[in-house]
Figure 1 (cartoon, rainbow, N blue to C red):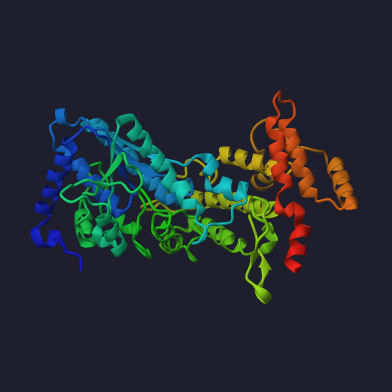
Figure 2 (figure 1 turned 120 degrees about the vertical axis):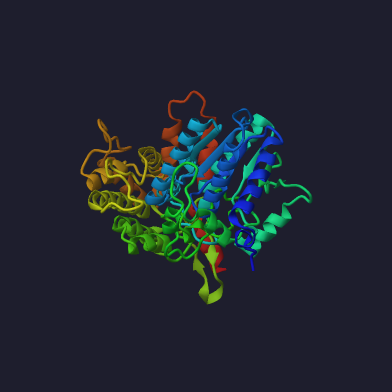
Length: 476
């Protein structure tokens, strides 16, 4: 059983000891700190303790840079994202007023790695436990890049984490594994130029709540408010700075992506809806839709993204494996997402104000316009010669894709119909011919076309191009 230090020694004694240690580590060198903040209880207490400890130092000793970073995966629960942004802004304002040298910011993934671009644009199947392509791209990579840049600019960096030994046995083992005997700072799991400082590692769950309840954060928010975020939660895990792609998914907690399909049921969204946030119903419906869509073979290619064909099972149970979402599935997902966005904003306009309400002064976008453009290009590259994304957008939104947009399909209907007819007569795969023509079009007009042979060769050597050989070998 975890030891409750505050109950045993008193809150003032425990916190003052932590303040002294924080100040000691802070003044020991000039390395900047990067603090992971998720808005959850552990990361909130970590930020509270550090900001309070540094505030107690004379102004001439507050020289170290402190970066408080929060990960916005671009598919955060809108209510949580609003709460995060509020706290980040208040932290920044407090730092300016008190000369703390704290920089608080939200960090987002590269749009080429965004959930929508990869799933709707390229057809990645929705994440599951054995294929969690999302965690590393949306959470780990953006923060790692930030830490690496800080280490590069300063030679070394200290990463401050709100991790605790009492969280779980695996967390306790991880902390022990990276601990250097006699040292406060620990080894970073992946970056040799980074060290980890865990100021609350010995606190229990009860200690954390004792710090929060009936307290105000230094930047002015009510600690009791946080309790509402944990009501009806199935899991209290947080991912302020996630280092392990195989760690339990944040989708089980109050702070996960609203699109999470790693878990069977999203208890977080459901919990909010049960507690009166009906505006989230369109999001939950869409999340459930993409969860079930991945098992519908009508919306999946029957080969992998690289064109390879594979088989599942053996003997009588043998069946052909599926690959990414096909164009039909991707178009349907975009249509449903835009519909969910419309329904969400309509619900926001009439929603009653409550603790985590989003201001309904402007429309909330579930997908960025820049992501739509990247998706559109992926579709065209994959044979969507009709340039159908702007058409889908207008059909759902009842307005043009963007002001002044002109639809410019790769071919006119008569040309496409003729190509389809020829391919059918010659028994040639239409998608293959469209891929080859798309490659030629991409290199057309360039002075150097050195990459075209490699691109054509890669396409022609895909398993799916030689499907008859696969079937022949399978029958042997």
